[in-house]
Length: 310
Image (cartoon, rainbow, N blue to C red; front, side):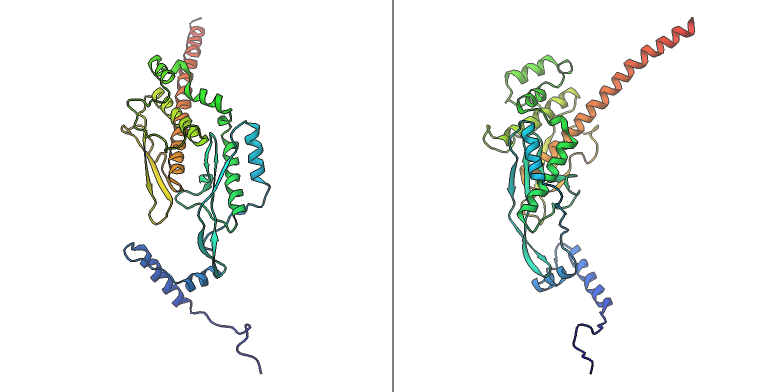
């Protein structure tokens, strides 16, 4: 007699009831006043069917070693890797600790970050091993350094460049103020001081460099210095969202510098500042190109007019 209890027996799944249950859970979770927490058994059962968090593949190469070698070649401080507290998540039918790692590189910021390992509006991915989390952070730090090689000067040269963005474009008063009192913020600046740390630490030097560049470029472009609003993400402990605040925002693109799902308050602030700095640098390049094009077109027009007169 054929067995009716073996795994080969075809069992019809009540898909309509399963869909109805999913719809009920989704409807409940859309209302923040009545969350629909699932039991551990249900979460473990679902994790057998689908993954709660897609773990990126980091098996190619050795990004940690490559990053260290590149940093040594540019005579920067060694990268700093910090593991976040593990998050228990259901994986393949069991709860397991999942890890995230933050890599901070002097002069470049912290990784992963938005567009470099973190999708807009999403949390950073987590990993079943600390090693893979570290490799993922190093991979995106390395990619950022490749995409933005203009931050590659040694610390002493980079600081000098940040303090002197084209002397011909800065007013003498502004230049003297920065040279005489480099630690004193501008009277019109709303930027709060970086997170309280030792002033000799690489992180403090990195923060100061970014904010000084923003201050100098904003003054050149006649844009007020922004302040930074950093707030905890709802339902995501230790994660923050942030945005810059300009008092006069007529020429500021909507959504400039907005970040979310960033691990750590300082990292969120630095990511906002990094986006503001990138926009200011692009704005300066655009204005320079416009000025150069005007100066170029005028001699050409004069030459053509003279040729016509002849």
